[in-house]
Image (cartoon, rainbow, N blue to C red; front, side, top):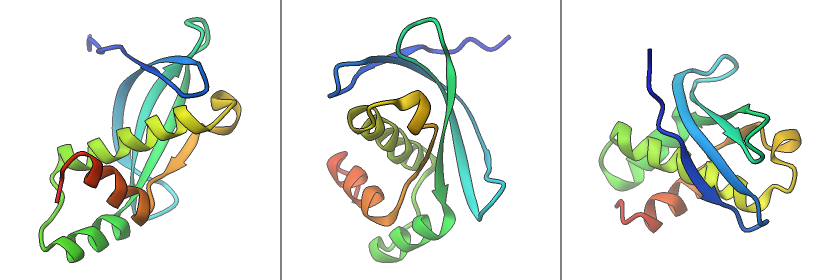
Length: 116
């Protein structure tokens, strides 16, 4: 049995989210990787949130910076996208179940973490 590490994030909307990383897999619709998190804001209802990281976005970043992104760096960018949704999306369960990392958010997330 897998032991999952439950983490907490307080969003700017005032909700306190608890989440854990479920896993990653190739995305069905595109050339991308889908990261899946289980999320709750009320400790009663848990729902899946998918964050899709397109391979083209990762390739663009690598070309601009002259190196490939390591797996932990990709995960960090995905997690930052999840946090941004926690901060910005009012009804996360209804409107924030499928998120995507674009070139701009990847650059901003990694830059804020000191990844060059």
